[in-house]
Structures are given as structure tokens and as C-alpha cells.
Image 1 (cartoon, protein in one colour):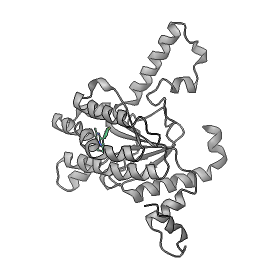
Image 2 (tube, rainbow, N blue to C red):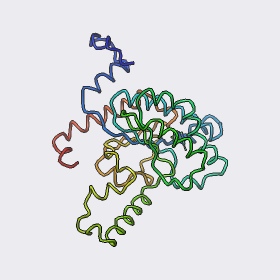
Image 3 (cartoon, helix red, strand yellow):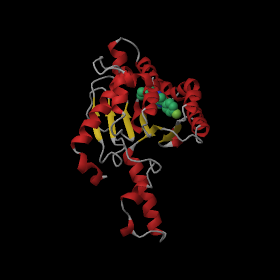
Image 4 (tube, rainbow, N blue to C red):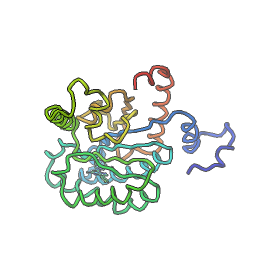
Length: 263
Ligand code: V07
């Protein structure tokens, strides 16, 4: 895709996706992109299809986005696949969703290994069905020697519960005399979150027109740029990711000096 020949193309030619990728990569890329993949049910509704068909189409959209992010040099991509609030959905829908990791990895794992991607998962493991967890953990293990982009799936994840668990574990350390309460700072707190091994996202994308965080990475998104789009997740394509990154780059150039002081 990143054809070196394209570098020699005349600037008069219309912008192809490859041209835009090359142009984008001249500027500061987001290090960590987080995505709330919303609008799968609505995508299906619009076509008079069952909701699960939308989820399946949404799963198919993950692959090209992962591939493009990795090729553009993004260090981490976190995808909100299932929230702790999603359990209230009809059982058949939940059962279907919990089969998607297996299906996704069944076809995509060899390519992830090949592309040097590191698969990770964050979320409350105890409620996740054994068959789902097994598939995810197999992928985590199979890619742990890789050192390319981290593909972090938020699965049964909720940010408030993550924060509360961090508070509890810090409180225990204080109680055991291993830590003084006044020593607790941003870095120590962050190290007790599920993202302790990752930098904070610098770009959040939410599809499908909802302008909410829905309990997603509340601590980690403190300084992120937010990109909201009406595009439904199954329709979110390479061009949309590039558009979001171009938007991010315009903003981070505008606030240039300030950004690095904040973070
Ligand atoms: C899910 C597809 C994407 C749109 C959002 C809802 C439905 C990929 C995964 C996945 C998770 C872990 C993993 C590999 C793949 C996934 C769920 C739902 C529960 F290691 N898509 N996707 N998991 N959807």
C-alpha cells in the first residue's frame, strides 16, 4: 500500500488514499488511538437486518483499521469491544458477541503475528466466557514476542470499576505501610490501571454520532483530542481513519507549544 513510487508522483494529481497516508506520516502521528466502535446495531436496523449482522460487519471493519494504524506507525490501538454495561443486552446477542473474538482471531491471528502486532486485552476477566478468554489469551501469548503496534481490546471493560480497583489496591498498599498516601501521584496511580503498560491515548474516535464517553478510559483520556463522526462503525474505512488523523494533526499543530507542557 505504501508504494515508494507514489513519493515521485506529481502534486497536480488528485489525492489518493496512499498520497494522504504519506502526507499524514510527515507530521506527528497519534501514539495511541482509542476507538468506541458504535453504530453496529443501527447499521443493521437501516438494512432491516438482525443486530448481530451489524456486529459481524463491525468485526470485519476492525481488520483494515488495525492494518492501516499499524502501517502508519501508531504505537497502540485500543478498541472498545464490550463494556461492563453490555451484559443487559438480550442473552442471544451477548452470546453472539462473545463468539466474535474467536472468529476474528481464527482468521486474523496469523496476519497479526506476521505484521508484528501485539494483542492485549483489558477488562474484568472473571465474567468472560471461558471459550472467549481462551481464544484471546492464545492470541496474547502468540504475539507477546512481537514489538510492533499494541492492539488492545477492551473486553468487559468499565472505567469507573478500573479506577475503583486502583484506589483499593493503593489503599491496601498504604495500609500495609508500603506506600505513603502523600506519595500517590499521576504516575503511581496510572501504574495501578489496566493500561499501566501503555501511554495514554492522544486521540479518541467515537463513531455513530454519540458525543459521550460511556465509561471508557476516563482517567487515560484526560488530555486526548476527541474525534466524533456520524459514520457508523461498519462503514468506518481507511479514509475515515485518515480523516481523523488529519484532524488530530491540525489541532495538535494549532496548540503546538501547549500540548507537550500538559502531558
Ligand atoms: C466485537 C465487532 C466490533 C464492533 C463492536 C461490537 C462487536 C473484534 C473483537 C475482538 C475482541 C478481542 C479479541 C479479538 C477480537 C470483538 C467483541 C465484539 C466482544 F482478542 N470485534 N469484536 N469482540 N464487535
